Amino acid sequence: MRAWIENFIEALSAEKGFSPHTCRAYRNDLEQFLGYLRDSATGLLRKGKKVDVRDVDNTVIRSYLGFLYNNNQKSTIARKLSALRSFFRFLVKRGILNTNPAEAVLTPKRGRPVPTYLPVDEVFRLLDGIKGESVLTLRNRAILETLYSTGVRVAELGGMDVRDVDFDRGFVRVIGKGDKERLAPVGKKALTCIRGYLEKRCEATGYAIAGSKPLFLNNRGGRLSTRSIARFLEKVVRQLGMLRPISPHGIRHTFATHMLDAGADLRVVQELLGHASLTTTQRYTHVSIDRLMEVYDRAHPRR
Image (cartoon, rainbow, N blue to C red):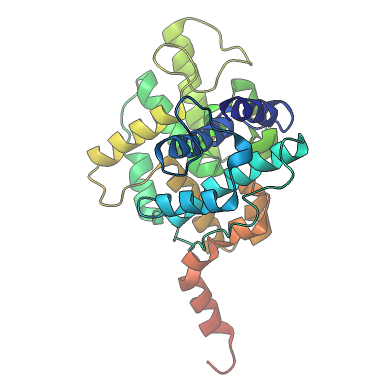
C-alpha cells in the first residue's frame, strides 16, 4: 500500500499541479490510515505481510473513522475521508481496484464555525503596534499591512517575489491554490511599507534587489516560511497584550469581514480571496449581522 501512496502523491503533483503543502497533507492523512491498519485488529496485516489495498473495504474505513471520532473534529475526519476517496479513486482509474470502498461511507456532517476576526480598532492597534526602523521591524510591518490590505493566504504571501508587486498600478500578483494566478489590489499604506522595507534591505545588504528575489526574506536571506510569519505574529500579539488571539489566516478572515461590513459585493470578495466557490465566501456573511439589521431597520416599511 505504501508504494501506491507514493504513486498517488506523485500523480497529485505531476498531473493535477497540487502544491507541496497540499501533497504533504494528503501524504500525512494516508500515512495515518496505513498506521491504523498496522496497529488495529482489522486482520489486514499478518506477521511479515504487507497491507494490500485490495483488502480494504468500506467496513474497514468506517472502523477507521470511528477510531478518529473521539480525538478529532468532524471537519478533520471529513478531510481524511476525502483523502481516502481520492486515493482509492486513483487506484480504480489505474485498474488496481474495481470499486472505491470509500465512496459508500457517509461524510460526517460539519458545522460552520464562525471565522475568527478582529474589529477595526484592534486591527489598527496591531498594525500600529510594530515600532522601529530595523530591517526586521520594517519587514514584519510590511507583512501585516499586506495581509490585511489584500486578504491573501499566508502561503501566497510567502511565495511572492519582488517582481509580483506593481507599485504603479497598486496590484500584487498572487499564485493561489492549484497554481491559479490572480491580481489582488493592495492599498497605498501597504505599498509604502513594502517599499520602505525593500529600500532598507538594500541598504543593509548592499545588493540591488533583483525582480525575481523573494519579497520577504528570513535572517539567512532565504524565503520566509509561513510558520515564521505565524510565530512573529504570535509574538506581536503577546507583546501588545491583545486579549483576542489572531493568526495570519485570521487576518484574512478579518479582511473579508471588514469588506462585507463596508458593503462590498459578495462576488467581489470571492474574487479577492481567490475562492473557487461562492459557498466558501458566504460563511463570512453571518458575522455582518449588525449591518444587515441596520439596513433592515432603515428600509423595511413595516419594521
